[in-house]
Structures are given as structure tokens and as C-alpha cells.
Length: 421
Image 1 (cartoon, rainbow, N blue to C red):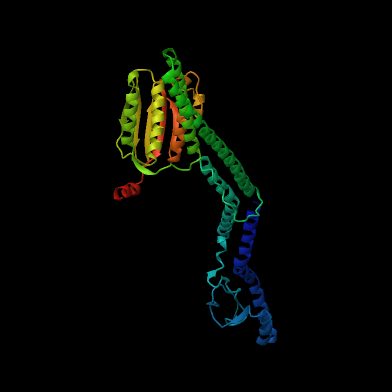
Image 2 (cartoon, helix red, strand yellow):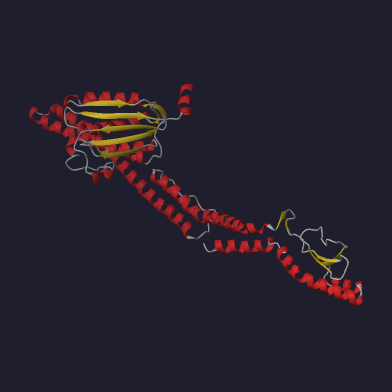
């Protein structure tokens, strides 16, 4: 960074040497010596005649000249220095300073007082391009890191313009790309492992279900209860395998599986009707509060329905019997905002950041006997992220948990295209 002030100072000195106007100093010097020269010329004229004075003035190479006789002894040329010759009738000596320097023949060089501004401008230009050169790898790395954090495992920092650049910023960019390659490879291997295991488990589960059905036909009455228990556990494992497959698929995606315009209120009505019927025996109800606004989003309808169903189902599980779950829907020009609030025990504050992690459970508040596998909210988070949205959880007062989902609203152009086609 020391290069910047050095270049700026050097540029300023060069400009000062080039543009400085020598005339003020020359005029001061001539003003001091011209009276002496006028006296010398008067002495030579008196002793040796006018020719001797002319020979003396010729030695000045034209700087000092004899002016025409004039009572006022003035020179119409600007910036000249004149001095009367004593003992003569209006004879004057005149000296003209060096010509006024011009930059490119256009701009007067006497504007030397602008040098500080030019120096600052030079410093600013050099600093801008130097900072841009140094920060370019960091900016590319930041953009790639943001995309990588959003789930795009293929995001990498663009290669530098100079492949052999070896400063710290370029090294940071290369190290980020190597790290991203390793992380992406590990995540891909993990997803492939989960997918392969889930696929391998589905076939034995299907055979077990078939065998259990055949055993139920021949089982004695006192064994039917045990068979029911076996069937319940088999269903739980089947749901777990299915959710693992869904989560592995979503984690390996960079966008929703399908893209269509979705009227969110219509979708929510269907989800609410299904869950109200399912939880009717516990006396649960879902109270929907809608704010004005066009709630149309673009994405995969089945995936969004599953995500919202997971959140509402989770709230219904942990809300006491005969208690409502509240759902607030608000839409503006940019976002659809959905808040689901239950009246359950809530979640410890320290556990809130982990609530959307796969298989995470909070002891007491989220127990296994509720029937969930701990993957519902993880699937919901990934589904919301694939649609360009965001999700977060917070404890409600005086008790309960509130989950807020925000999804981007479909643009006017997208809605217009849907109407036309």
C-alpha cells in the first residue's frame, strides 16, 4: 500500500515541474535588476554613445530591449518590466518575462494551484484500481460462499484473471474452492449413502408387510394385538425411510422439482381441512387469520403443501387438547408471510437454532411417542429454501412455539404469463 502515496507524490511533483509558471519569479528578478541596467545604459550612452548601450543590451539575448520614446514610459505588452533611462528624453528599457507556458497548447499552466486537487485525484484513481485488484478474489469468494451456504454445492469462486497470481487474496480463493470441493464430495457421498440404504430397506419392508398380512389371516385371536403392534412399528419405519429419501433428494437439489403458480390460500384451505378432520377427536382446530393481499407464489405445489403440513401437524401434536392452533397469513408486494403458533410447552432458547436439524429432538417437549421421526421440520426448511424463502422459530408468550415462513411472491410478469397460457 506504500505504492499509492509514492506514486501520488511523484505524480504531483511531475505535474508541478511541468505546469508551474516561471513568470512570477522572473518578473521579481527583472524588477530588481532593470534599474541597474538602465543606469548602466545611461552611463554608456553618455560616455560612448548609443551604439555602446545597444551592444550591452544585445548580450541579454533579446530579453531587455529599448522601447520607443514615450513620456509615460509604458509597454503595452502584458507582464513586461520597464525602467526609464536617466538623462534621456523618454527612452526606456523594457524586459519581457518568458512566454506563458501552456499544457498541450490549450490550458494555461499558471493554474498550478490546482496541483493538490490533481494529486488527490491521482491518489484516488490509483487507490481505486489497486483496491479493486486486491479485493477481486475476496469479492468472488464472498459471492461463491453465499451461494454455497444457500445450498448450491456447485458454487465456486471464479478463477482469477491471472492464474499465476500468488498473493494472499488469490490463495484464499483457491483454498475456498478446494474446501468447497471436499465438502460437496462429502455431502454427495452422505446423500448417496442415505439414498442407497433407504432403497435397500424398502424391499425388505415391503416383504415384511406382506408376510405380516398373511400371518394376520392365520393368527390366533390372542396374537392379533401383537400383530397390530408389529404393523404400527413397520409403518413407522416405512415413514422414516420415505422421509429419508425425500430429505436426501431435497438436499441434493438447487431448486424445486416443479415450477408452477400456486394460490397459497387455496392450498392452505385444503391442508387445514385435512388436518382438522384428522385431529377432530382431540378437539383441535386451526384458526386462520388472513390479511389482504395477493398470495401467489411460484414453486412445487406438492412440496410446499408437505412443508406447511409438517409445520401445522407439529403444532397440533404439541398443543393441549381442545386448544386452537393459530395461523396468520399476510401478503405484500414482495413476500408471503405465514406464522403458525401453537400453545404447547415451547422449546428451550438454546435449542431453537437446532430445531430444523434432522433427527433433532428436545427432551420432554418433543418426545418420540408423538410418532414423528424428527425429519419433518428439516424437510420443511429445505423446501422453503429451495423456493427462495426463509424460515425461523421463536418461543411465543406466555407459552408455545411460533414458526414463521416467508416465501417470495410471484412477479406480475409471471402471473400475466399464467393468464395468457
